[in-house]
Amino acid sequence: MSDLDGPALFPPNSAILKESAYPHLKGWRGGVSYMGMEIGWVVIATFLASAGGVLGALAMRADKPGRAAFFWMSLAFGAQLMALGWRGGLRGQCPLGDVGEVCLFLAWSLTLFYLVTGTTYRLSLLGVFTAPLVIVLQLIALVPGAFDTGVVRADSVDAWREAHTSLSVLSYGALALAAVAGVMFFVLNYRLKAHKFGGGLVHGMPSISRLVQAMARIALVGWVILTAGTVAGLLMPEGNFSIHLMVATITWVLYAVLLGIYFVRGLPGRQLAIGLTGLFVLSLMVFAKL
Image (cartoon, rainbow, N blue to C red; front, side, top):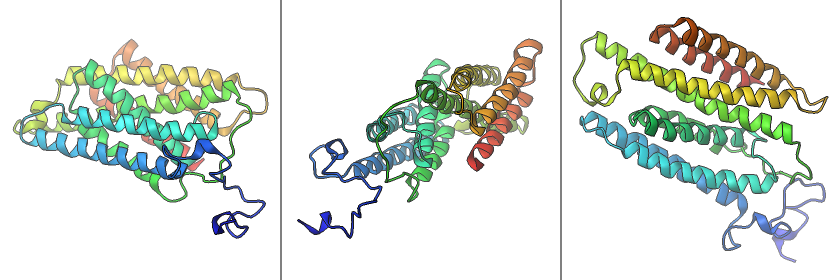
């Protein structure tokens, strides 16, 4: 028996899973640990998102806005999928059981909605603003201890709980993107009022009206997904009601009020941007403390 299999490293009550006992934890060739592959994909995704942000910013500064950010963020999206796939295989359910998984899932969701929105509304410059948030989330996921190492594969899955957690975090990707669009609105509005029309920043941005429209519709999509997640949470078996579900419900109400005022009575773009950005930051801080 080798030293790696000895009792010093793997005591009887250890929660750490032996790779030899779980073939699905091995790398592609069996020589790389599951955790090594997982962290590796997050590192790759962070590098690709950084490249997208930097190259997109350089193109914007040169007054040549292109699709560099979109291209590199697409590659980052693929790496995020690989990392989530590895982690989901380990848990045998949606990978949302620790801080690392939540941050990675949120980064993936944010990237997903950026890729869809950037194509739909031709907001390719949004990637320059999205990339930093994606990078921060993935750096948090890379902090030692963010990913649990002592994960036991689930024997059974509560479908309603899975739907609640996955849809709720997915909705936050759209709501985060709406907040990012709000930041874009502040930057564009400031430069226009200050008569700073030079450089690629203003030229690469959409019109104020298109940006406000995109901001509201992205937030509406996020709210609809959050609605589905909240309903799934309410349908969970008795005893599974949590403080997170209560906070998600309160968040749902606040976004419903803000979007209801915008679509029914009308709301200036500045106030909408303040509301969407403030609500997202506030709700994210609350969830971070729970």
